[in-house]
Image 1 (cartoon, rainbow, N blue to C red):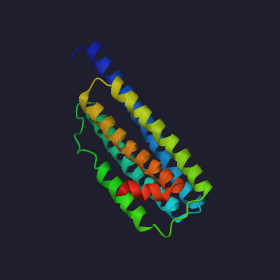
Image 2: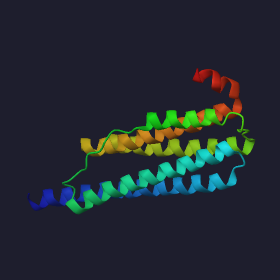
Image 3: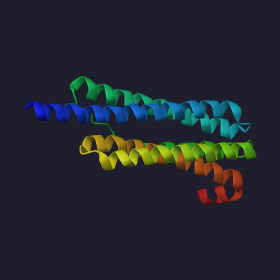
Length: 177
């Protein structure tokens, strides 16, 4: 590889690593928000929802760190492969746990407000990752961002489900049938 191409590859790697650092910061801020929300909301369902989402962010943080480390250590030559997101199964499990708490759940307006704020956060993360998919030339890096999009999309659906449950529990249960 000539010096011009080597310099271009290094610059591209630095760009990718910079974007991954931004993604990592985004996930860390999400974890902090969800952890704080879990201690500040009044309803049991809201607390469990935010605890679930904070734990989810931990998984994303670890994934991004591993992906980053692999790229950095290999100089961008080794881009890890990974399994598909199991977000759908985790969403179904979450909804099932919500249904089991039927008689214990009494969401408050502040819980719903917290859900809506969290939803805006998740939608923003999803938009950031979607932009990275369109701007990345490497299909393996695109797949990584698509994995993150699927995860954030699942979180948004969890939050939408919680909002729907809080606003109209009867309709929420009817839709599950």
